[in-house]
Image (cartoon, rainbow, N blue to C red; front, top):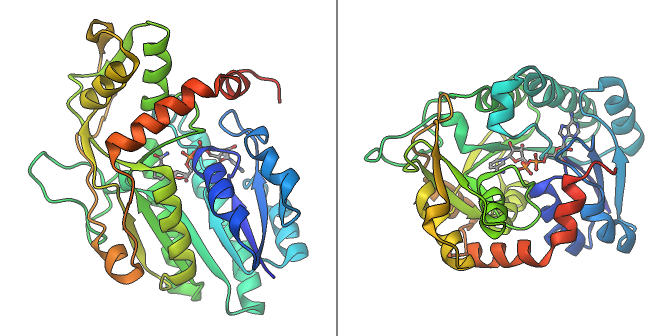
Length: 332
Ligand SMILES: NC(=O)c1ccc[n+]([C@@H]2O[C@H](COP(=O)([O-])OP(=O)(O)OC[C@H]3O[C@@H](n4cnc5c(N)ncnc54)[C@H](O)[C@@H]3O)[C@@H](O)[C@H]2O)c1
């Protein structure tokens, strides 16, 4: 059995990874570490932890280098898939420091601990889960980002992710650590913390509250269903080449206002609930991903159409109010 470390799997994307991918594997053991910040709840993956003895949870902060070092030495991982991060752009504007501490220094701790294991086992692999936001923004007419685009982040969040990407790349170049970076567009789906656009709009629409839309609502994001992203991350872990970056995207560019309108329509609510609010400082205009490299080299492409995925997501939130109450409460 190969033993893999997963970080940040009490959060949105990682918990879905545990449910749809890690739980299905027969050749692997997975250790999960998570600091259980406001965005991470062990309850989200408790059912899987109860069911599968090959999934083990450790309550651990990636900023704690000595505990990370000790765990790596005890558990002798053969690979890491690194999801853990501070992930909310608005929070990064209010408090950038923790973004550097977790996203940059936390990643550095994992790289240092990984390097020691790589020296004992050359099959070791490290996948760093990153974001399209590191590329900065596009105009409406520019071609989608490829892996060759310059890194040009706009927010403290994307700058911290870009910094961690560069560190990861440097561990490949300098030490030969077999690292791979995935850069993915905006995810949506079940178990997303109710602070991001889609869950916020679903809750507000359902409660007939005003839906705050930044600026004129015309910013464009490329939306990907979370399971498609996770399949891409797993493909990169299994088949990706060391030192490479892989863009993953949903092939579903939508203006924010289009997304809000779909939610209102699905919930039978009036567009009068929309309230345009002062734009986020440094708000990127458009993201779009060219994922032809992942398609060609890994055989990966997204499978869920946006209209289908968003309906599934809205229905999931309506049917899972206890989960929402649990994550919004502070009863860890
Ligand atoms: N959500 C998106 O649309 C998106 C898109 C592309 C890439 N990503 C990247 O995917 C990863 C996961 O994103 P998400 O949306 O699931 O985020 P999330 O905020 O929902 O979850 C992050 C998880 O990391 C944990 N965590 C935070 N700080 C930690 C620390 N110091 N030590 C250990 N654990 C810690 C949290 O408790 C939480 O469980 C991030 O690296 C993010 O940058 C996200």
